[in-house]
Image 1 (cartoon, rainbow, N blue to C red):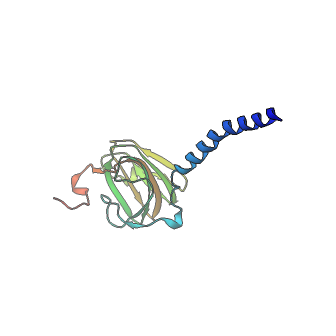
Image 2: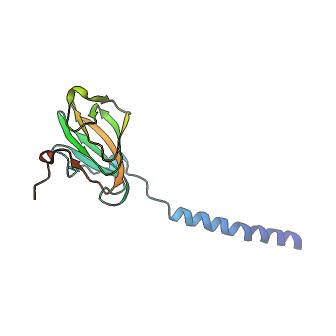
Image 3: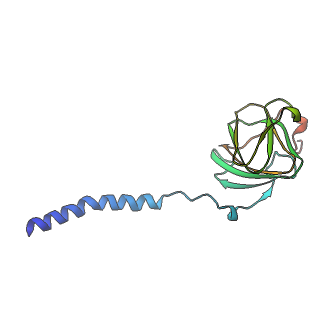
Length: 160
């Protein structure tokens, strides 16, 4: 009987730290990304031509670290040639998106993407996008978000 009690106590002592670790890890679990119904769509983002709306899906595009935003682009929308300081991962959610890698938007050289298709716009590489009928995309990158237009005259932000 003594050995049964000692064995049982030993098992509890060994298991207790594992239970404590499990509870601790559950407490520091990161928040889940927002569901589509929870997204708050806003004008912008800053630096893009007027007409698009965006929502933060996870992370914070204004701070260092990974982030994902959704962007809804209306019909006949385009973003002239620009670049970002980090790779930009673009996934088409709905609609069709056309893009190219050059110093100027060139509709005849555009490559098309359909829902579910992805493209990586490499850091510091000029690229542009356009949509004829409208599109929704998800963009993931390393923050803070920054956009530099190949032609400064194309930058929609107010001039200082």
